[in-house]
Structure formats: structure tokens, C-alpha cells
Length: 77
Image 1 (cartoon, rainbow, N blue to C red):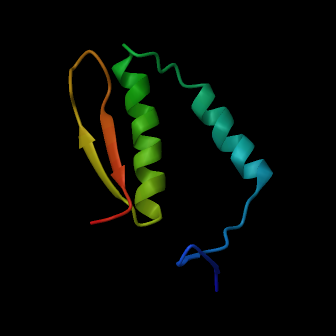
Image 2 (tube, rainbow, N blue to C red):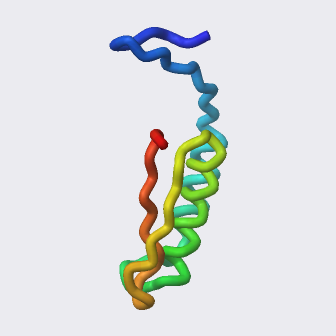
């Protein structure tokens, strides 16, 4: 069960500092400058997977081939 905050039940999550640091290291070691579509694509794919796993809706927009994809992430239908 979760905790009620402002009329919404918040689910308790488990936090692992070791897992967080491993994932952070992975992300910061991707060359993902604004005009590096391969790198920004890897970052987008990572977050697309993470948010999809927790049931959020993820829509991918490709605005320009010179830059990577843009994600539109929502927690509502």
C-alpha cells in the first residue's frame, strides 16, 4: 500500500544507490551532444524503456535528422 498525499496514493519505491550510480554512469558516458543523433537516440531509447516499464505513455517525435528523437512522456491517456 502507498501513502495518501493530496488525495493521491503514492506507491513506495525501492531505491538502490548502487543501481542509480550504474545507470547514471551509463548515461553520462554516452556522447550525446545536441547535434549527435546517434547519442541522443541512445539516451531517448533508455528513457523510453524506463518510462514504458512503469506504465507511462511515450511518443517519439523526430523533428530533424540532424538531432536525435524528442520524447513526449505523459502519465495519462
